[in-house]
Length: 513
Image 1 (cartoon, rainbow, N blue to C red):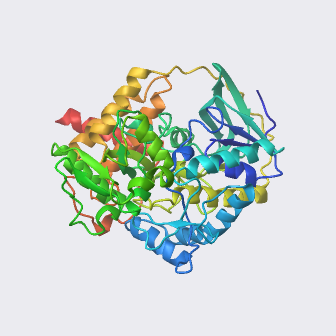
Image 2: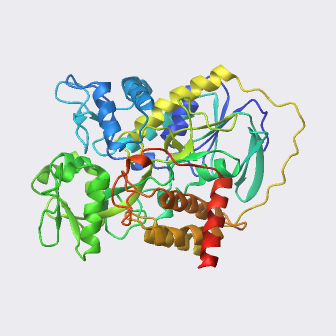
Image 3: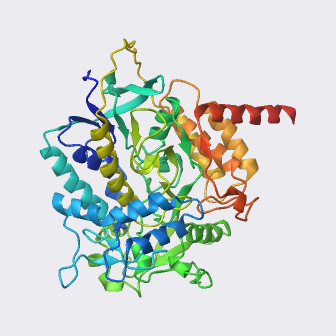
């Protein structure tokens, strides 16, 4: 399989990848996805919706203020203003594609409330099935688009770069390695939740995109910031189904097995920022308590119609949320860090853009505001497409040695160890001893030819950055540094060379001891 170098290649079949491909029309695009479209992506699992300041009492400025407050001092005001200002246009795009957003009795877009938002500004489709409805609509648009070629069941294993510029990608399909030549590559590969034992993400979301970029020489930013959703449904499934934050927006409360509402004295109560709620639940579980989300009074008989996806998930597990509280626990949900990009989505490598959760744009800072993730992917898809169209990537004429790619087997035992280490040492609450242990062991597992070496490397990046950030901020909580420090109101940027240097230093310290 070989394409002419001028063809644009996008890796990833979630909202970021699909929206970017559509916006690039009429330029020819090849979309590489690891499974059939609509599967193995995080977008279909998104229940909350899309944040957009559409109400009469709202504005992009207020939306930006809420976003920056959640970002805990490391959000980018310029990027935040741009994204929140683009929200209405992004919703209009989806309406033109045919997304059937929920409406109120007057026919206007229905606006919901979620944690840390000061206004009702969450647009939904199909109640709590927004991600699924949106992705299904975009898939139909992609299938109609003549400029898009979709190749599924592909695993990209390497981004090839030379002299600081993209030259192509190596991957595997049906066990057969291949090389695609391109000078314009967009990574839209999602997040890192699959690195953890408890996650709401597809199990294939293991940081592969930012590791591909890092191995090619790209700069990463803020990879220590991993958001744990407070209310994953604890019914023994892997990945864990999600009890949308909109349930708490409708008045559902958190209680332990004794019926104690432990969020009662916390500012914002159940609608406090996600990191606050997640840590409160984590403390209850660490103290030996079970935790439940009780929607019986607030939602009650309206549950099947208002939250059909959550209702179906609960009923499949033998639990009726109309009559019973829902067992919940924190689970890895969203990665604020990733490939460092600018306002056009450009990485530090010429010809490499990143969109969606794999990118660190500056919008989310240390803690993503609810329902800003789909918005970010849509907004940057617009800007990346404009940038690529304006730059007109050209083939590189200098001879380039064609690689000889080889298959890379999956090692289930290594993956299980990575997930255990990340959950134990790089989870909701962290400390120096655990982070050092994780960084050293994960860096050892990152060597070798198995496909899971990249997952271990992703974990090592997160552990090393978390060890370096000696404070607690947003989703990053250190029990040994519990306070937020003004001196750390900055980004941590790492390359692969930086990581190797820091791990070597940790190894030297271990030998010295």
